[in-house]
Image (cartoon, rainbow, N blue to C red; front, side, top):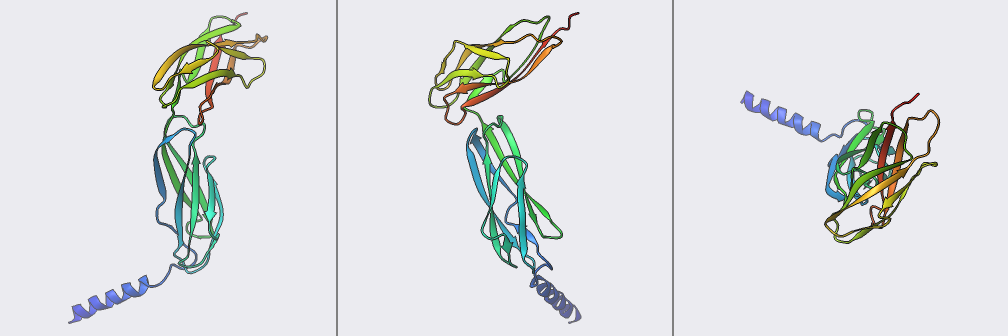
Length: 236
């Protein structure tokens, strides 16, 4: 009998405690990460995270920030009463990201004293339909030359042909051109070409470093960035 009463008392205590909310505001999410899976470069994907206040005081969403240029917003009230809900909308813009597995984080700042900053993870496997090899240029030369020619190739894994229309050098004083000047790449094919870089000699300078952009008529990848480093041996 004593054992039975003891078990009943413990069960009553557990039930009583579970009936009370956590003291103060308390943030809780149904999930704290989302995997978008395979995403084509240039696409923007979104996801909603449901936030619940499991505390006994109003939870205030003070601000949102992210580790990238991801857009984020509160869909609903920023003041969440006890047992109330709101939604955090996170959008992952994949423009400019290199291919591969990417993880970004959205930080949710609230007045929860125990978890003032909650983290939401966004994961994606970014795939590029247009690929350029080499993706970066590193070249060591014995002496300065005003023209450097780099053999390259471009691949198109999409279902439509694309055209490389030209090249841009964001940095003044340098220029480049393609050979041939216009390159048509059919679906599921790869085309070789040459990149001719024209450098300007400057006294005391032994390397050129920066980036150039291939201009392409692709709807999601209109520009492909290529970084370069051209070094020359020092001469007296």
